[in-house]
Length: 189
Ligand SMILES: Cc1cc2nc3c(=O)[nH]c(=O)nc-3n(C[C@H](O)[C@H](O)[C@H](O)COP(=O)(O)O)c2cc1C
Image (cartoon, rainbow, N blue to C red; front, side, top):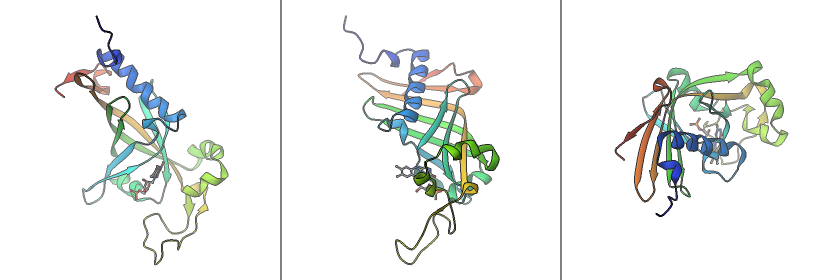
């Protein structure tokens, strides 16, 4: 009998562990698909807004993820009104799509100062004082970025559900919900 190329896709508990391996790999491996998820939020007008972020933390036990951002960015204003977010990852090598639903808590100030200390000097310009990200400017380089600790925010994603779609020889789709203690349910792909 031929052995399966993707045994992890065939049983719900294996699939759940595998998708967490993928998420966790995003933290340590710059080339992993989960390194650069798409984070979607809903703005004040009800419009979905999607953008690439860097995945910074993943905790399977707590089912949480974290990414960093500038407190002045539009996504913060959106999350203050509606703390719901979706995270999307397409791992082309594994033919695996992950869709995460989460409630987001914005962490800032003292509660993130340890993380700020660990950010290398050159990377701190992503969190700055002065004109906010997205403000109009006359010319493309009419800006300076001055790092500011109080501009540094952590988006703490408390996962409510993760959906996996695997496009292997057989297509498989499953959803895992916090409300079901992550037991998992197969779905029609
Ligand atoms: C490869 C890549 C990685 C990025 N990582 C982050 C990130 O970790 N945090 C972040 O706030 N923006 C990140 N950005 C920029 C966002 O995609 C976006 O342009 C910015 O956050 C403004 O989004 P907003 O106006 O919807 O808040 C990244 C962009 C790219 C292309």
